[in-house]
Length: 94
Image 1 (cartoon, one colour):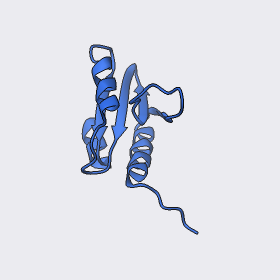
Image 2 (cartoon, rainbow, N blue to C red):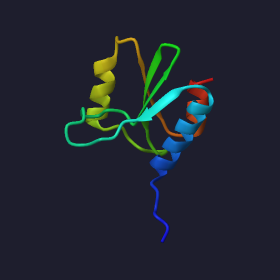
Image 3 (cartoon, rainbow, N blue to C red):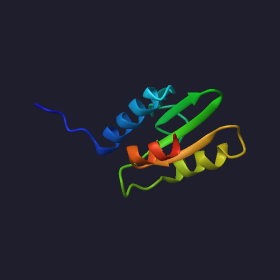
């Protein structure tokens, strides 16, 4: 029996593979009991650049904890993006 995979999971895999191909170190942040509320799906690092990536399916909306996380890291030496497709990732990570 084939397992149904969420669209966001497929997009996340594509983005992760693309970034790794481009030389980024990428890891997935798993939500669990005790996790920071709203922590993005992926963290990518390369040459001192730290990027937090929230992945949504097209039309998906950011939750209040996700928006709060993004606001809380503003002013830090890192970036936060919400990406809806591999094309979005290719635009941000040229």
